[in-house]
Picture 1 (cartoon, helix red, strand yellow):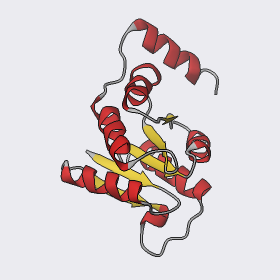
Picture 2 (cartoon, helix red, strand yellow; picture 1 turned 120 degrees about the vertical axis):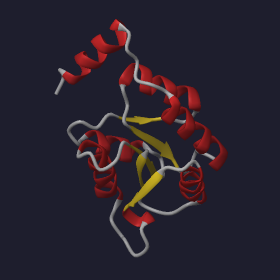
Picture 3 (spheres, helix red, strand yellow; picture 1 turned 60 degrees about the vertical axis):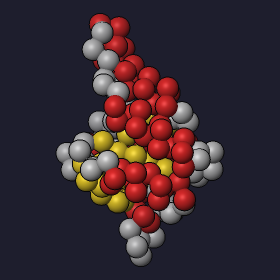
Picture 4 (cartoon, helix red, strand yellow; picture 1 turned 180 degrees about the vertical axis):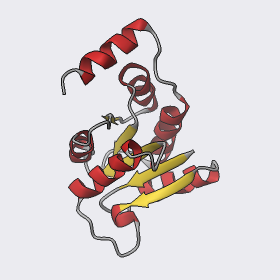
Length: 145
């Protein structure tokens, strides 16, 4: 699986998730200041990470910012992005099932490397919900655009 990983800075939590993704055999594309010498600010790094998914350059994305909130808002401005701010594995699973999230967002301030890896794994392992309830509500959210 090709995964875009974006952030506005490197932190132990970003490095841990990147290393874990690579250990799992995923192709990882770094976005923003995770790339040596890149000084892109958080809003554009977040949008660029989301665009990697919506334009088909990545299957999904993992995105970080200090609180996670700004990155989630910026990513959701990209048409076709469904970014979800998740602080634990169960929230990530539910974001996939009920919301068909394609961008996982986490807080660097509030998420330990171990929890971030667990949350990322849950997000990647969880399928999109296919129940009528799930589909109906995803369509209802899409209609808000």
